[in-house]
Image 1 (tube, rainbow, N blue to C red):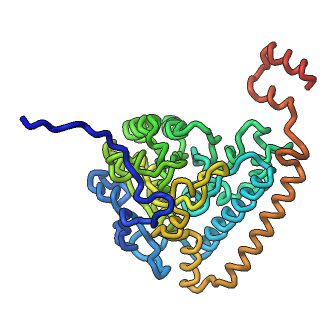
Image 2: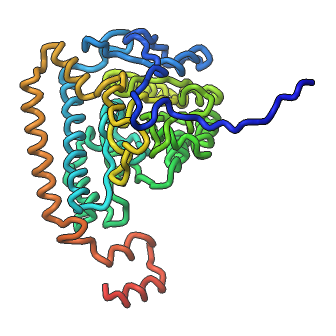
Length: 410
């Protein structure tokens, strides 16, 4: 038997490092409209190929084509465009506020606005999202007040979470937005458990789990898929593949599976990949998965192929690990620009109206910011009461906490 030689340890490497030329040749982009739209009750084994392709609706000319098109009216698309523009403007103002020291931390959604904004419009009232820190579009698209979001970011006297959460970790039961956790992947198993409880209770509400590509390496991700597939939980399992974790490219967490959607195949879960920068495609696929869940057909895993155009957070410098021009080279474009061009192609929008809408939205965001800042910011103005740290934890306060509150004089 021949000597195989010395073993070599393999560490995946990104295609390009800082200073190099961006290269997305390893991202095959199928023709828009080419992906079939399976029946809701499809056997997962017959759609395995969809875990390796990308569902697209908008073509290069801004036209909506193929079997996944035609689900939204012009009015709904105009509303969706406004939601994405609002989130982008909100992001810019809050990023600036962080740089000015008005809050300690912020995370942008730049380039990923379509994923959460379009998805929310596919859900019904009462459905529950278990989000990560980059799905604020779920709130924006559901009409959650921007002032309230900003109060939470500033941790001021009007913060609905009373300063108990890191900035941008919102929570709203009324808007189907479960409390964000800084611990990666925990929300995945919680979503599946919530969905199982809904089914056990003979309710009609479904759940949506959210996770980033890097966090799929956590064991909670795989545990969630086991329970979801075994009990046919009414849950949509979302994976946002924005190409980068913090400073680690997606190949580390993806391993040898080829795609993140392919992870669902081994659990017998139908798995789809969708163009995450295509508002129409995201909404159509989310609607398909939601209908499956409501008809007791079990979970669906969706991988959104997108790109994090901004930094991971206000504490991150992406130029240290990827080329500065990489976002410009991303082959699936900008979700706001693509929907704008589609609406212009349909004759219901124009560059002039878009510019006007940008100005109107910015004015609205600035007005909300001024109102929020009147309640205080990180280093100035009103703060949550010290008393709040003792409240809302126990139905009846234990004696040791009562003593501590008395000692604090609150």
